Image 1 (cartoon, rainbow over the protein chains, first blue to last red):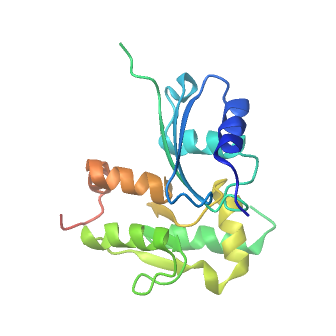
Image 2: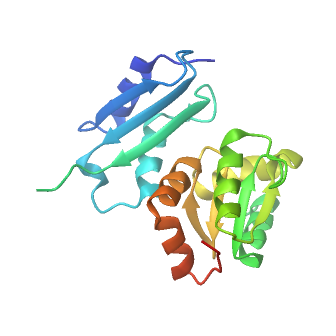
Image 3: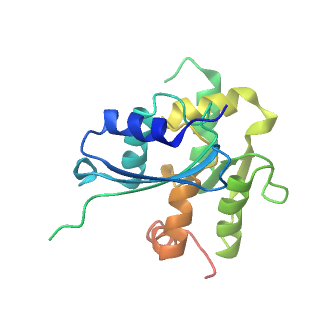
Length: 79
Length: 111
């Protein structure tokens, strides 16, 4: 089952309220997405922990109805 | 200790091999593009690794997700540490961080 990009974005923002989320529909098929997530909550966390936070926000959909979500996370650029 | 025998088997794979990739298919014949990408990165670097085909064992396939609190496969482990899935490994490979991590952990690699 496919998920809408807006739904993915909404779930991530509910889980990580300050997140800046960019979703790209890689094949235009509503099934293969790339998400770029930037959040201050990622500061001091490993990449694995950052991705786990996003997966947690997606509440088990990753690997299920959300088949392919390429994920890239980062903390905001520090000035 | 876990009550789940699959978790104990996963732990012993990780304890017994410096570099372990839980993947769909085998390193020679990956059955999934994401697994293929990670296997390819390791092969390119000349890293010896143990591939565990989760398609051959549903208990391992489900257990590994619980083990690492990570919902997808592939999963790469180096010297007992969970390094990441396809996205993280690819990002690390491209930036050279993967090579650095392998070197720090004393894993021989070519590139």
